Image 1 (cartoon, rainbow, N blue to C red):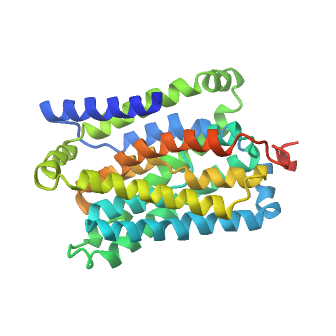
Image 2 (image 1 turned 135 degrees about the vertical axis):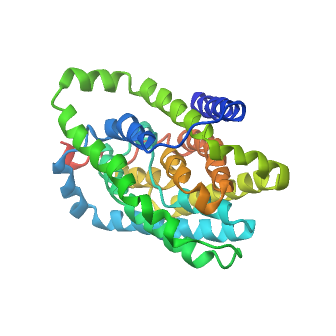
Length: 324
């Protein structure tokens, strides 16, 4: 509930600030800020010895990749086409290809999932950001005609993919390898990680909703107000389909499968919001609507899943052999 309040306050205050001022001019430094404050701390407990889990749980990893990069994008495209809006569909698609998120390890630990495998999946999904951006580009290229809009490849998602990978993956990972040698600093970050995460999310959302382009949401509300409830309904349907499919595909009695399960039902929304700001001029400001709606759906849904389906301890051990 606290995170929902933080998200709403950040969005409202940021949008208000942008409405009464000239607004912020977008800078890629926000990606670096997100990478250092949100992604880097998640990588502290990743160790190279965990890589051998790739072979040990190769079938589970392949199953997870199939869910996150095939099945969920299909759900997103089908629901997006039903909305009839290119931006809304692009935003929903962006959510579908970003697995995990800042809260995913919290839910894995709370449900007694395999944390070692969870960290490995988090690392793999970060590496796959480049694949996610490529998928968004392919989606836009072949779907623009359906929505009767143009998709200019010269201003496409490809133009900033390398910068995103560098700022959100490469630098945070290299920095995490340095910081882990400074034990007092690691301890401080770990002890105050929740507060750091919440403050960072507030700053990021405040900044993103205070951007000059975000003012265009007013035009969306004036001319197409129906897109707001349509986006919320599409996002709710997406998460419902994701939950049903994930519960059917994963064995929740297994600690390892629980870790993979949470990496499917949790989407990296803050990362999606950051990247969407790069491409508002390409897909339209309505691209922000599904991501805004997803915050309102994913957080309560995660609490519901944790309480209703994760009360029983899994049969297999919480930690994988690599963690012992």
